[in-house]
Amino acid sequence: MVVAAVLSVLAFTAACSNPGTSSGGRVPLEPGVRSPVIPSAPDLPGDAVDVRFARDGSGFALLGECRKTGCRQRVAVLDKGGDAWRLRQSPLPDTTGNDGIAAELMVLGPGRALLTEGRWPPPERTWFTSDGGRSWRQGSSRPPGTTAVVPEGGALVEGCLRVDREGNGCERSPLLAVLPATGQFRTLATQPPLKGVISPAGESAANWLFVFGRDPRSGQPALAVSEDRGRSWRTSRLPGAQGEGGAARVVAAGKVLYAARPGPLPDETDVKNGLLSLHRSTDGGHTWEQVFVHRKGVEPRSILGVPVAGADGSLTIHSEDGVWRSTDGGRSFARRAGSGGMSGWVTTTALFYLWGDSFGAGNWRLSADGVRWASFDLGGGT
Image (cartoon, rainbow, N blue to C red):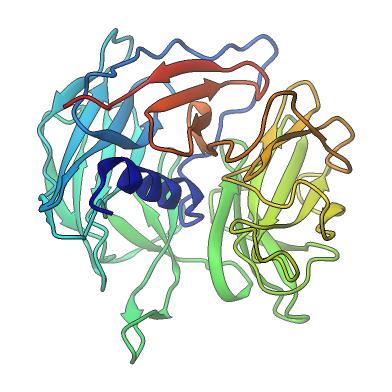
């Protein structure tokens, strides 16, 4: 982890695969919408380990420049309509030794971002900006109160209010809301009716939130859906979902929802980011159909980030062994011509899908419709 390129891969992997926030929900797709042109900035110092955008096209990038003695953490900002990324004052302290890049970046609206220190145990120090990184206000991830709703532009995150006796996990972990106006944390007043570890699973439209956990009656994997930003919840089962796995990742293409369930595969020891199953809903998440389930040797066996639901009706999975595309609702897949090996991580931001390469080379792509992608480069300079 003392090599900057390797560290960039690890930090980016953690940021993009982390299901703990729902701030990356995409705006609904519209016919003819194209990805905005994002300027490249390959001369930025260090590696861009995370990039996030607001709906107006402005954005923030977390940069890490690492040496054997530690890492310097910087922040670059793209203003609305800007033609260049600019370094801003970073409140993050340098890390030492093998600590690497621990911080997390969250964009809460135009010019608004929250940096979380990423240290254990919680609560963690935070820094919030509302003026595009020109100034920062220090805070904490400890919630001082409750909120009835996750405000639009805010984020739903998995909290940790009390560490267990061993100090390795959380004994009490309710869902928290991050307020976009202040960057402060609040406990969500109405918690989803699930049991076990409950994790945010995504957003689809302006008021819709999804979380993943266990059905309180059957104990089987299930989603809880809120259509009013967390004021109320309903539960929907994921039929056929069995075994242990990570939180489902929900994406939307118009009225069609897809939920991908990652987790360790029972018979594929060479796969690190297994894809257990895919589920599809055409009624707003009231009911789900399992359209794909892992079978030994059948691709895609893995998923890197979230599935990409295209405006053309396609579904694309970026995997450890290339890019796989389905034209029948996720029931079968064909390898995209020329793809192979680690195919890059895909996440969602408020400005549609975001792809980053798997090797920390600073290559990024953005797509409004899941079909056409606009490329840009960030970081790698000294």
